[in-house]
Image (cartoon, rainbow, N blue to C red; front, side, top):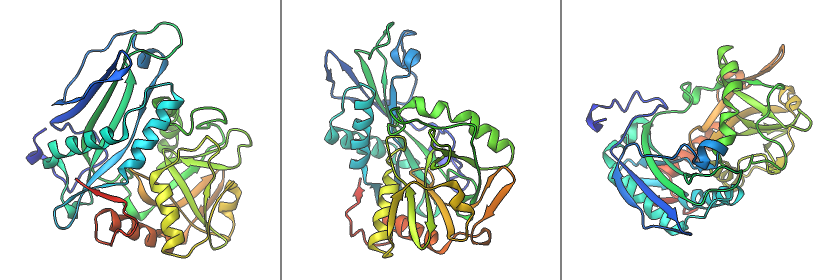
Length: 341
């Protein structure tokens, strides 16, 4: 799509084709140098491991436009590290971190005209992915892989924006189990979340809150986002036991809460029952796509809890302003998180 035809002030989180992507192939035990190519289809064997056994991983990143017109990335080296951690879990080859960052910058520069303006609250979403495209029949890793990076101009992930979302807690479906792939950003994890998300959205909720698979009591994730709550004056987030994706925004929020807001941050089991007590004053979810999204209410069965009279909580708002301010360089980046393209 021509960049000049896009209304950047009305973007949702939907696919819009940009002009250039990056591709690198892994054959005979090594990656080639990679190349920029026009965005488009490519051939794949029906016997490809990704199609038969789901051997695929991906990342989510954003390029943002600052008030001065600069282009920024937020902690991209963390995405590179997590990408390789996911690769190791899925028995896929690592991709050199330095080359990963170089490729990201090349793709962003090549699609610079698609980066939404500073005042649009939009971003150029960046999707690096790796698939086992080599043909395979037995259940084993592929011998050949393809690394791809494409971009999409996007608006807020939740159309409700910073006004808050209504969520349903499910006891029927779980996202991941101990010993599984919950901590890896693999394609397999997301396909299983589509049905519970569809069912809850049909009832008017924005997303579902998943509980742990063992006890069906402790909060794990909000659909595809990490969860936070203010409980007894402390910022609490579920601890990762290999079932929760180690979010980069999550990690950053924990640092901001501790260093900038002087809050005690707890990584611990959070029973969903705690959300219905007065000691829990506000809640939000976070992620590259979600950024920081306030949680307006949670529901399970006939029980409903509305936080902060339906408005974003004070801590939620402060963290959002800190995070987005640093990302767009409206606030001094004292943590050296921002990388300019």
